[in-house]
Amino acid sequence: MQGWRDILKKSIIKIEDLPDRFGPSEEGSARAASVYPMRVNQYYLGLIQKKGDPLWLQAVPSVEELQDEICYPDPLNEENLSPVPNLIHKYPDRVLFLVSSQCAIYCRFCTRKRKVGTSRMLITPETIAAGINYIRSNPEIRDVLISGGDPLLLDDDHLASILLRLRSIPSVEIIRIGTRVPCTLPMRITLRLAKLLKKFHPLYINTHFNHPAEITPQAAQACVRLAEAGIPLSCQTVLLRGVNDNPNIMRTLMHGLLRIRVRPYYLFQADMTRGTNHFRTPIETGRDIMRSLIGHTSGLAIPTYALDAPGGGGKIPILPNYIVSEGDQLVFTNYQGKTCFYDCVKTR
Ligand SMILES: *Cc1c(COP(=O)(O)O)cnc(C)c1O
Ligand code: SF4
Image (cartoon, rainbow, N blue to C red; front, side, top):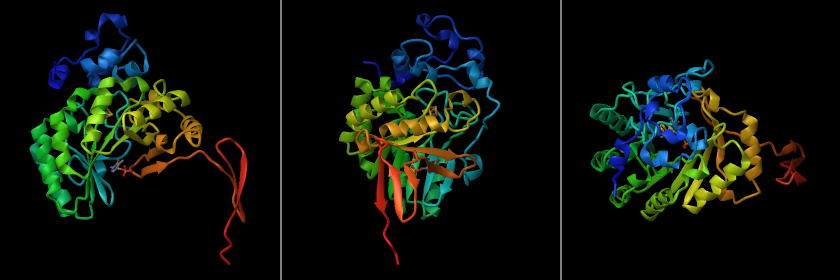
């Protein structure tokens, strides 16, 4: 059996090394790969059926990345919200702590496309120590989100050392790991890793699936293994044009996640990240998808549709509009389009 490191080592990092079965490469895609790094590991490559399919679009560079003149390199203003490098302190009680610059694939829509997988994302033992010191000296931080890059690309010992130091800070109540590995390199979720993570409860994992074809038996095994280690699993999905921008695909994805014990958490409107404009959909697309889910299926299958406000304003939930009018009586439409009424409580 091949280990995850071997699978990763054989990743395709150049357009010309893609298998012949996909046919000739697209004009300009090699140029895109030289600006924004490419990595398609052998596992994820195996899931791609054909050029241009939803998995291909997520992983293979396209010339469109170079044609974006609308979006910004750092739309969420993360660099200016970092008191120490690689730690973003935007909300008072929680931080985003970037501990790895590597991922199992380099997603073409990545919000940190400006630096993930490149030498512009410098993570060293010193930056990690500085992040931990910052968290220790700011006791209002009760929730630490470890992200990157992908934290689960660190080896077990390195990861354990970070978790151990975070757990030694009394004010840190919960630790969350943001990782795409259960989806993009599920063999990384070894029994040894699950056993290690278990020592740091309360620990939550937020993973990232975007399409039902990513829910394979291997991904299921990885998620179930983490769930059996007592780790609550949630998923953030990015709404992507050509990948999952339709109600049927989204419903299938949400149901598939619940079957592998992952609870949908966020559905993100695509950020205004330079090089990703071709993935963005109108807000109405997201609202229509939410309208197609709410009431029609289990509440557990329904993520919060949210937009991360440009400039660092934080996540803003967006709901379809159900309210027709407000006053002494609230008038609204239900999920079937039927008009309903609710008499408001008189306060005087
Ligand atoms: C998304 C995010 C968080 C976490 O937000 P939740 O809504 O609590 O999941 C924290 N910090 C930053 C900088 C973020 O972008
Ligand atoms: S796994 Fe996450 S951080 Fe890494 S490239 Fe994909 S979206 Fe970006």
